[in-house]
Amino acid sequence: MLVEVRTLPTSEPATGAHVTGGLCRTVATPGAATVMRARKREGMTRGDFSEERARMVEEQIEARGIRDPWVLHAMRTVPREEFVSARLQESAYDDGPLPIGEGQTISQPYVVALMTEAVQPKPGNRGLEIGTGSGYAAAVLATIVSEVFTVERLGPLAESADRLLTRLGYRNVHVLHGDGTIGWAEHAPYDVIIVTAGGPFVPSALLEQLAIGGRLIMPVGSALRFQCLVRMTRAGAETYEREDLEEVAFVPLIGMQGWRDAKSAA
Image 1 (cartoon, rainbow, N blue to C red):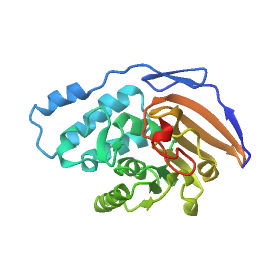
Image 2: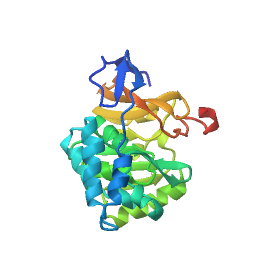
Image 3: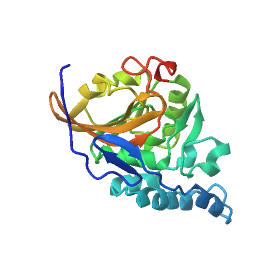
C-alpha cells in the first residue's frame, strides 16, 4: 500500500515530556509510589482499593496533565488490583509497571491513561488493542467505547485475560490469540487503535484497518525497550498524519510486521 505520511508540527507535549523537532526527550517527573506506600500503612481496609484508585488518578494522572473526562472516569472505575497477582495487589496503584508473567508487564497507570487519551476515544467508537497482556488497558478503553477487539500473541495471557474480563463483566471486549502486527481485519475499520508494544515501524496492516479520521497510538523505535510514542491519524484513504509525543519503554512488538523475536530488537 502506497501512503503519504505527513509529520505535523509538534503540539504541546504531555506533562513529563518535552518534544523537540519531532524527536522525544524525557524530562524526569517524580512519582507518587513513596507517598502511596506510606499511606497504605495508615490503615486502609484490606481489599478495598477505592481510595488508592482515586488518589492514583489525582496524583499520577491529573497531576501530569490528563484532562479527558472519559479517560479520567475510566481510570477511576477499572479495578487495577484485579489485573495483577494477589501478591502484587498492594502495589497495584504504584507509579510504575508490574510483572504479569510470560516476561510481560502491566503498564504504569499514567502510560495507560496517556495512550488512551491520545486516541481520543468516544462512546460509540470501535477500538482495536494490540497486546492484551493482563487485560487492564482493554478494560479502560472498553469503559469508554462500544466495543474493543484485542489481540495477544501469548496464549496463556490471552486465555487468562479473556477469563478475567468475562468474570468482571466486560462483555464488550473480545480477545483473540494471534499475531497482533496484522491486526484483526474481520472487525475493521477501527476508530481507535492502541498498540502496547514497541516496533521498528507502524505495521501497514494496522494503518489499513484504521477508519478515516481514526487515531492510532504506538511506541516506535529501532532499539529494544526504547521508543517514541507516535500518533497516526488517518486523514484520507492513503494519507496519514504523524505526531511524535514522548519517550517510552515497552516490550517488543513481535510478529510478521514487527520484530522477528526479542533478540532482533536488541
